[in-house]
Image (cartoon, rainbow, N blue to C red; front, side):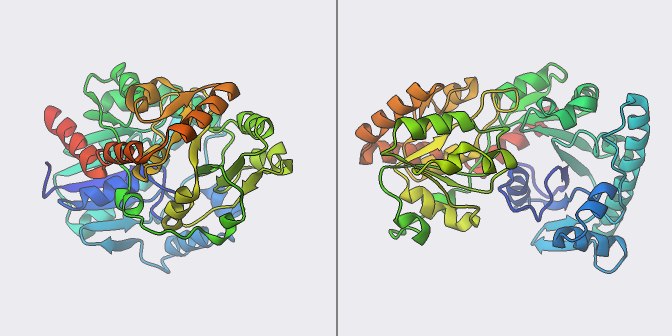
Length: 397
């Protein structure tokens, strides 16, 4: 346990993000025993002009003009900082040297804002926790001089073109100079160990109370008319992560099954053949507190991932959410899924695997299996994951 410390969190997802965020959960857990400053990603010049009508962007513009306070108390021991300084949009720059020159300028602007918050809050003996932010936080260890710097790897960012261009050089350097690295999957901890021997697998948690304590019986109105059996997915519908062709093949092979997709869609999903299939239902994005009711209404929960560098080592948080409600889960097999979830899920790759495993899961499902899934998921709490983060920090500092 680490207690009575001051922790600064920087990363990719702002506090006002509308999707689930590992880092927000970690921040909330840190704040139970420590003071925590959660730093939003600063407003960049491209977003300021292109998305100026977005209420979130408008708020950041107001803050940059001094019309609103940049420092907000979220709850006891937890503050949120909106950096006032606008940073330059530089990822289009091809030259590594020129990119790094402007990236240092951006880092200095961000550090200036964080130092303001440090002075306002009286933070000392700081732990700097970097949530996978390769560029904007690359120089913060040098600029802020924290007592301890931690790099948190929860996705293989270099598989994405945006991060790959300059990240192939910078992420290994960032990992190497961090005091300790922690990762939410064994695949990513092994990746970090290539550059830093102080790299540890810490798992991740689930907002267990939302899912495990669900006791409603009535289904949401927009799912009541959908025929059984229902195969369901909750989460962002992103072609980068999900296999559209696999979903199409399942729906065509088993027209008597209903495929229910709950979440916002990217362009590839919006334009896909899935929208022409009569047994596929898109229900749109839902507030997080409503998700348990939809999972409860599913017969089988799906995670049909694309197998790629992006997904092969990630920890899909929705698996714990499904299991916390005792639901049978059919998911794409990856080394991490096989290592951690094999005993409690049905894992396959092809459409034939999915059809066979969904059929098996429906036939085998009973109260005993449901209870075993719930018990297993209950061990994956944010309290346990943060405890492992504390152990990793204390082992090297």
